[in-house]
Amino acid sequence: MYDSLYDPLLDDVDVVVHADHPTLNRRVAELLASGERIDVLSTHGKYAPSQARWLRPLDELLDPAVVQALAPRAVDLCRFRGALLCAPRNIDVRILWWRADRLDGPPDDWRALTESRAVFGFTGRESGLFGLFFEIVVGNGGALFDLDGNPTMTGGDAEDAVALLCELAARAPAELPGWHYDDVDRALLDGRVDVAAAWPGGYGAIRASAIHDRLAPAPYLAGATRRVSYSGVHGWAIPTTCADVDGAVALVTRLCGAEMHAREAAAGGIPARTEALAAIEPANPVDAARLAITRATIDDAMITYPPLDRFPEIEDAGWAAINAALRGELTPREAVTRIQADAESVLG
Image (cartoon, rainbow, N blue to C red; front, side):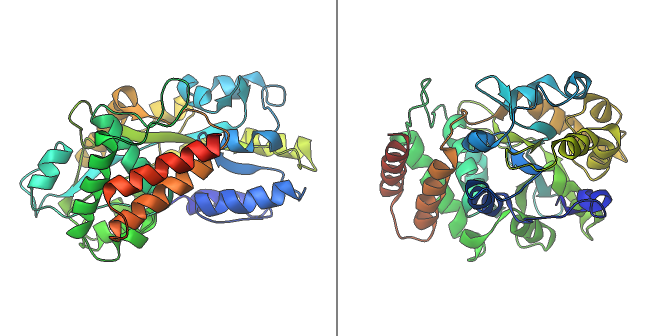
């Protein structure tokens, strides 16, 4: 969903790794640990803490005006222990898209979804699946971590969340446990599911699809306690293995500039540069509704993980256990017990 945004760079930049984010994280960890040259890295606010030992703090490298042009909350999500580890590129927060020709209206909450006949498409693996678990638990009043960052992933809220995902997967296409983000988007646009959540970067494909006039936006599903949407910030970082710091700073400055953030907005994304976000003009009533719902979600419903330097290991263990439950290999209680044990092991 983001590939078109790289087009202006390809004449000047050698792409070392091009992959989905979990794959990117693993490959980048191998390269950085071995001292391989990476000048600029695409990362994410939730993953940057795990890369902190390899990333140069940007506060002393970027012109202050570059950072000041970016949304303060997005900048805060890119800090770890006070240091700005990446410069925010966009604000990634999901909203719901539903088939107006199939359903009488969008489900407002998880209970309404389960009681309806709607087929819900969702990511069945990796960060998307663990993020969905996070949303359901928090929306129902629970938490994955306590205030000190200790894992709290067992108990009724966690078991109910996994059970709900198993129920929804059972009435979805059989291949759902293997779906990644782009697979969910394709399933929605191909008509294999009735409703799904989409990131802003997926709006370009929705807008261009043959069924765009039958898809409508809606707020993300609420839990029993509150409406939340698992969110985050993609950003640009400069690793310690950078061999051309001046060139890297110039590139990150360009990536944070008005031109690239306007390009992000044109593709449907929510740019972190405040002037680019303010300048977005909706193309039609559906686009206006999408933008209004997205802005309201950013204001009222964003949830993010605590900054943990070993978070990717927790996420990997978590989604693998939930995925096993979707496939019928673990019960919900067995899945959350395994997630908690693995998280405790990772965090010592």
